[in-house]
Image (cartoon, rainbow, N blue to C red; front, side):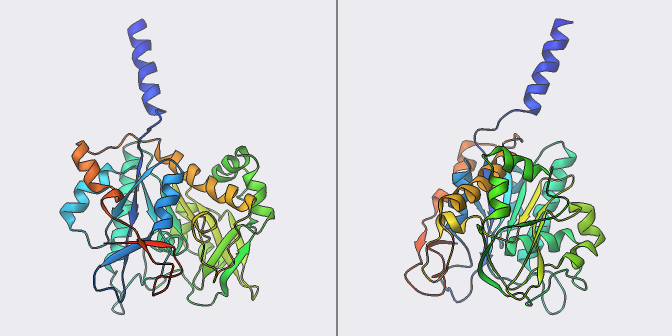
Amino acid sequence: MRLVLAACAALAAMATADNTRPIIGILTLPTHNRPDATSYFPASYVKWVESGGARAAPVKFDSTDAQLKALLPSLNGFLFTGGGEDFYYPNKTLTPYSSLALRILNEVRAAAEQKQRVPLWGTCLGFQLLSFVASGPNVDDPVLSCPPFNSEDIHLPLDPTAAWKGSEFQRAAASAGGVDTILTTQGVTANFHHCGITPDAFRGNSNLTKVFGEPLSTNKDLDGKEFVSTIQGKDLPLYGTQWHPEKPVFEWTTSHHTNHDTASVKANSWTARFFVDQARLNNRSFPTLNAETSALIYNYEPHFTGAGGSYDEFEQCYFF
């Protein structure tokens, strides 16, 4: 009997074990006018992941199937970054970028079926990408409105919906020294988008409401047009923010008016810890230490891009 109880206790401990070496896969974006690289992402997303206590590994949008089969099952979570990119071609076929995003979402779903909690976070374009692939994807009803929003360089408090209070996101933010209050009362969420999702479009898509339920928050652009700003999966560990939690902490261009005050840094820094804490709840790992080290972002050097050029809104970028 004691052996049975001990075994049960061990299994329970494994189910709640704290993975102290989480690695987050960051989906790269296609480059434009950059002959020395095919993909990139801003370094601020790597810093955001690292500030939460994880390491980063690039998931290149143009990876081979064999590369993805080796990489995706070894990662503890995934991040879709901000940026600008099409999700489908004029002939209505998915681009390699959005096709891989759908594959990653299905990886999260497959992990959940195996009782593994593998989180996926989307920021700005990544929020739109997550919503697009979760909505079907249906290119005849892409959910997104593009580009009706006047939301470039505005910094807002979230307008919580009825789903906000008591949500996993809100409860965790409240327990982090009142971050939920900062997010909903101070202008700390950095918005830099012209595309977005209206609440009516979101609620009118049965696939989105099945996956996410009610949005956690909305906001209005400078013209008073309302957009969905924060979402959370109902049964899957999916999180999306139309706003940028990495910018107030890690991006410093003087051409923007990003809020870098103490409250903004506190609230936006918390999002990284919240996300990485979800990634700690699974025990996925690479088969060998060599495979792990070969996948990490440390194999690449960031480029200083803030001094001028096509990517000067970012302090640094990684190019692949």
